[in-house]
Image 1: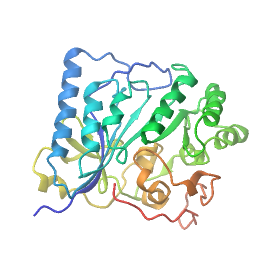
Image 2: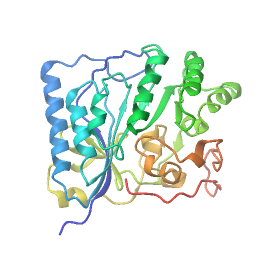
Image 3: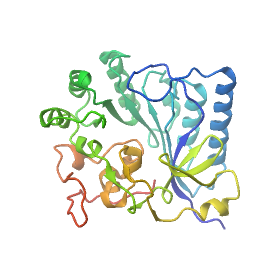
Image 4: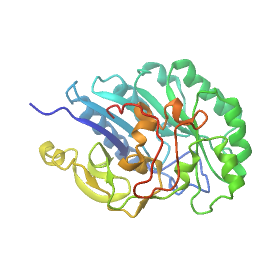
Amino acid sequence: MTERLELAMLYRGPLASCNYGCAYCPFAKRRDSIEQLAADRAAWERFVAWIAARPAGDAIGVLVTPWGEALTRAWYRRGLVTLSRLPQVSRAAAQTNLSARLDWIDEADPARLALWCTFHPAWTRLDRFVARCRRLDAAGIGYSVGVVGQPEHLAAAQALRRALREDVYVWINAVKSRGYSDDEAAAWRAIDPLFALNQQRWPSRGHRCRAGWRAVSVDGDGTLRRCHFVREPIGNLYADEATWRSSLVPRACTAADCHCHIGYVHLEYLELDKVFATGLLERVPVPEAWRGGAGLCLEPFSPGARRRLPVVPAAPP
């Protein structure tokens, strides 16, 4: 009998086009051809079919982390609906700019579907974006909302925070290349009490990480890697399962540091599984961790440093 699989999978297929063109975004700078879109669809549908064939006793979390905007493509919407209704799937989540149609969410299981939403002020109106968030509220879909911390986005981010329900977490992605004055950082922390987490490049080399053990990245062809930032393959999802499952072991990170949420959230010494618990894939922290910032000490890490973290039992991915 095959041992139960408990794993978070960050899926990134060949899709590389987006309906937005943000200057600060390094992704989605090409226009996919019909052939490229067909290849992306085939890769995604193969991945969904692989999960659908898994035993019902598995606990698989999926986060779609596309180079472009996935939810404008019907096959991603259908696939997320399918995944959300499978007993072996604990979470079916996607990163999105929330611009696509939302009628499909009514077919999904709201207990499993979740969205990681980014507001791009130059590409959509605040009222339109907030209306879409309220549509998620009405459907009972879990989600987080965020903004890239460009100085020109501050007023829009403040307005977004005021417009959303109080219990919706609004995250801010720090622009590491520019840095922030104390006053600037304080303004962003007033929106996102966990902003300091994303401001830093966390030391990772030699530190244990759940990536490659409890979480993996999956390319469109099935190539498995520890995460998006460690390029060495550890197997292929569609090859012999015993082979790639034997690679899922605790290990130390080989990268010097980690600055992206989908990477450092798995560093064991940060204990962010307690901060995000069941909302880890969609970037939704437990209320105790951000409403008032209680329970968190976000000083730069040093060996032996004490960290005050809310004690929330970690759940399967």
